[in-house]
Image (cartoon, rainbow, N blue to C red):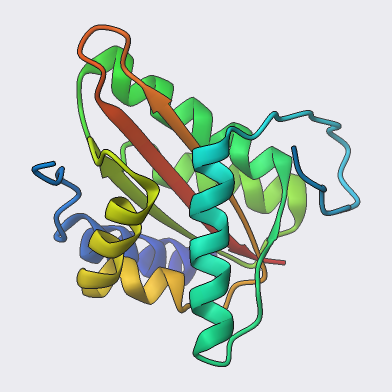
Length: 167
């Protein structure tokens, strides 16, 4: 069972990394989930806007809106910080992130979208919709999500990590 899960996860990760995550040229309620870890996360306006874009799109095509979970946003923020520190744009350690979320929150499935250096939430969202792998996550069978958008203090580039889960 674990082997099949890991194979599926690796296949998903492989497919997700084939799609571009490059740049364009150019205070909220919390979902309550029984979890042993209590976390606080302060969402900035761009993160809220991105979550709203995703949920509005999902509802417009007949899907459920996603409820945010602070713990997932913290994991997203950790990945943004990793990418900034290491000057990379990738899904490194996705398996560890997803296993942690599964363990802590009891998630059944986990998906991840990243983006780099889009100037607006709309631009990043549009790029995700234009990418089959990212769009599949946005339209996926998920019920919760988290997001973090961080700015590299050296060059001003924005890093986006959006994690989707089904609990």
